[in-house]
Each structure stands twice: as structure tokens, then as C-alpha cells.
Length: 140
Image (cartoon, rainbow, N blue to C red; front, top):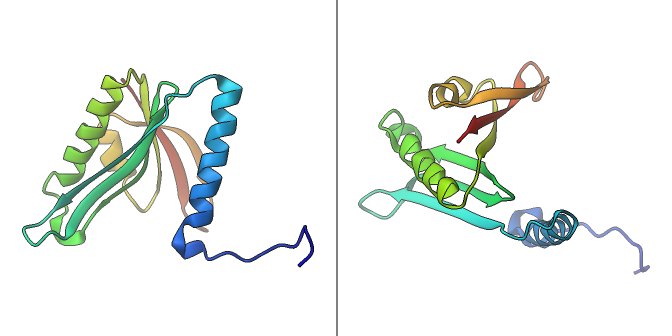
């Protein structure tokens, strides 16, 4: 193996993703002086212990980013996603964040997030083809 050979990694196991997240956080923290990054992960489980709704994200440098929010189809429209977002907002406020940001697609939940006080601040057309991706923000 040459010292600069490209190696295909197993993307499914998350090892490389975690490695990169750590390296990028180290660089960003050193560059900005913000070393207050804290991960968030919350779930709601049914009586059998199965995850029926979950949220992941982090706070860093005065911003809370929700990276993933999911509610299992049979449990939608019961307020579970809103409860998770309210939890994230409470944590964001505790951590002195001034805003929450997230991304969603036109076929996912932009109207839902708008009802919760988010606004679209950026749009990428044709991602995926024929749709849009939105970056949304809620000021706290």
C-alpha cells in the first residue's frame, strides 16, 4: 500500500464519520475559540422499548443545530416531534444559544417547522432533482 493510497471505508459503521466530526470540531474550535460543543440525542420509546421518535443535534458557539428529527409513521400527528423540538429548544436556551437551525426538504416538513416558528433562510434547488432543500432558523 502506498502512503497516499485511497482506501474505501465501511460508511455504514460510522467510524470514519466520527473521526472526521472530531477532527473538524477540533479545527473549528481552535479557529473560532468556541469550545462549548455538546451533542444532543433524545428518543421517545413505546411500551416495548422500540424507538418511535428521535432527535439528534448539538449546540456550539451560540447555535443549536438539529441534525435529525424522525417520528415513526403510525405515531405522527401526536405531538411527539414537537415535544422533542421543545426539549431541544429548552436545552438550547440553557446553553445560551440565540438560534436553532436545521435542514429539511420540500417533501419533508417545511410547513411543520414554519408553524413552530422557523423561517427559511436558504434554498437549494434540485436537491434532490425536482425538489428543494431548505435551511431553516428559529431565533430564540
